[in-house]
Length: 277
Image 1: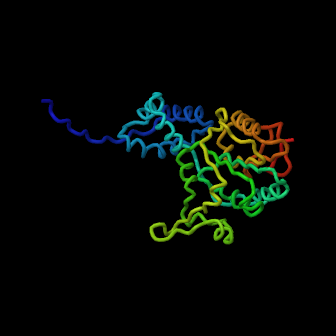
Image 2: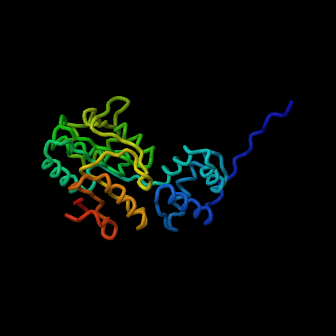
Image 3: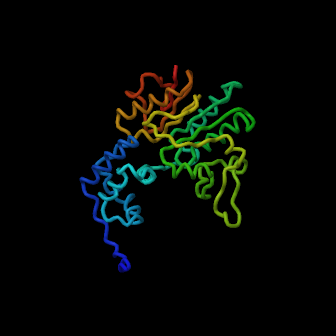
């Protein structure tokens, strides 16, 4: 009989080399359009190290070969999740939501559709939902479509379940009206109410790939994500999204972003707010 296998001691993970960093930088650019600067080597090393430990790999090169082998699509998606930044909060850049309320109020009776195109863990989409519920009512025909490249954060968004420390920015009246405070084992958390969640749908969308069956929208939010793209990728992404915007619809970017030199189709109506003729 063969001798029982003896567990091998775990070896320390080698440092991320410049060559390995260049491989991951090219890979995340090809998969998600994210352009990592040379200064992001420490970030990439830190975010991937835990996964290497879980897989008992001893080098970043081993992990790169794993995710590019064509045999581990789930692991490649996990790598994308680890290397994408998902910072968000409720009512971020509140003037945009004031504008959304204004547009919705002037919209008329036709169904009203909004896309949160980089929705992360859902705070932006649920903020939109609170605004539209207040402006149009819960029984009106409005929908929110939320998307992100990271399936991990979309799973959190679909649950609509957050720590109470995430309530900063939500007006107290809306918090009481549309959110449920956790009790007993759920103490310290809150849940977006079911009647609000029923107006919101989340799906994974890679903004640099051909778009899936995305609805035609009256307003599209693409905020605080273009800073990670180079110029050509920005043009590609904005053109893709603008194709799903109704004539007369509005396209909104983050306060540190602009469409100057990026889109000739969308016309500026206010800082960070554009309109499709």
